[in-house]
Length: 172
Image 1 (cartoon, rainbow, N blue to C red):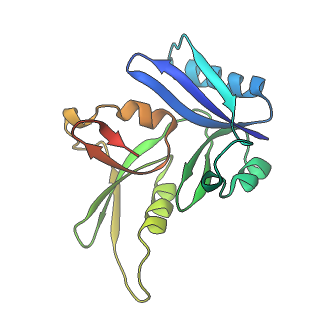
Image 2: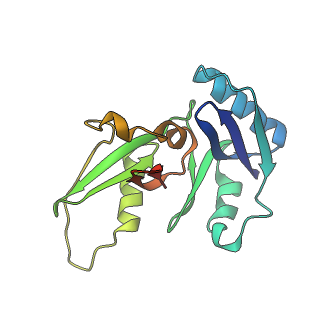
């Protein structure tokens, strides 16, 4: 398998993501299927093979991803490395995790389990420390002005923690 970076032109800006596929042709088929399944009409997209040119700090778990992941989408996230998020239709979700200390963290992930894995990897607990968390739909109660650029991130990711910036919108 190979890793391809895809860039799709959208009315609200370019959407970028990564695809695991054996050939560029198969990666292109996945992009086209994704567009059709989501009833999106994209006039242009580009693909570039990147697994051989990635910076060293982006190579964690790349070999495992390329050897084991099925054809589909993937994201890179520190400290986890490459994560495959394969579904019949690529749909990432925004999750809000509230902890017992009152902190609120937003994450993009394909499902609740992956959101929790990312959260636990980011917030390591000291030995004996306990923390209760609640995983909620991140869109619930989100004001309309905080939806800016969210569709772009939910299309391809990357998965992981995100923060809202008043000027730029959501940042991964």
